[in-house]
Length: 123
Image 1 (cartoon, rainbow, N blue to C red):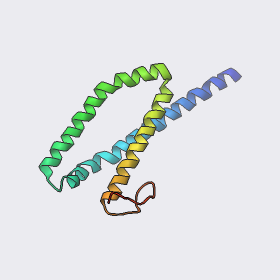
Image 2: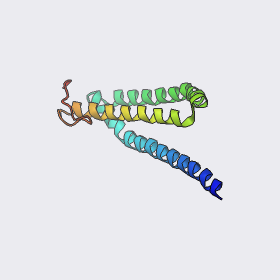
Image 3: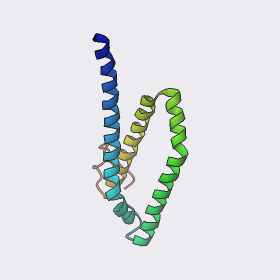
Image 4: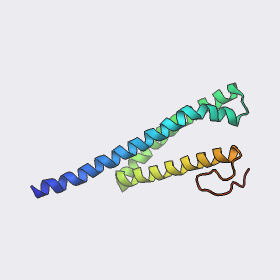
């Protein structure tokens, strides 16, 4: 009975870890998808046609990167373990999201509104 409990605990922890990872990915996707078209339009000075081209380019590049790097990530997870690859992917996602938020805060003119609470020197 004790061995069954010990076997269930790591499996439950793995399921919780995967669930949290999926929730974080969906949260990031849910935050980016509604905001990205307006963000791109703001970056190109309100030109909707140019923004649509860039947004389409983003989608194409995203699909191409999925096509290229899915096998690479699969090979890395075979070599180093799924958990290590997912943790590294989450860390990269966190850094990317923080940089987008910081850049957006810097562009809006708010000098102390970045994620890292530092003065935006690029403004």
